[in-house]
Amino acid sequence: MIDLRSDTVTLPTDGMRKAMARAEVGDDVYGEDPTVNRLQEIAAAMLGKEAGLFVASGTMGNLAAILAHCGRGDEAIVAATDHEAVVARRWHGAGGP
Image (cartoon, rainbow, N blue to C red; front, side, top):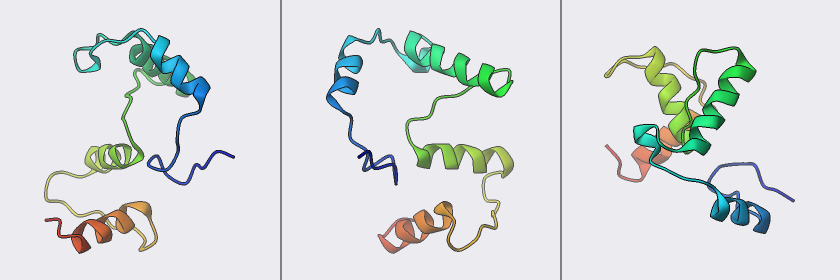
């Protein structure tokens, strides 16, 4: 069984590890990773968008989505059970800013 509750609990299978070891890689910050570039192109095409953006985690994706709609210092209203609210409570409860 694959656990999809969170990107932090899902572990790669042996096949995934082999694919990662064989993958052509580069620096995605400079747009030099052909695998990331292709993934972004495929996602954009599937969604009919001009471009796609790979992010390394669900948390990073949530932050990017919020920052696309809110400026620094703005507040976002979310339900108490939304992932962003749960993460914020954990962060502040764990001594975060």
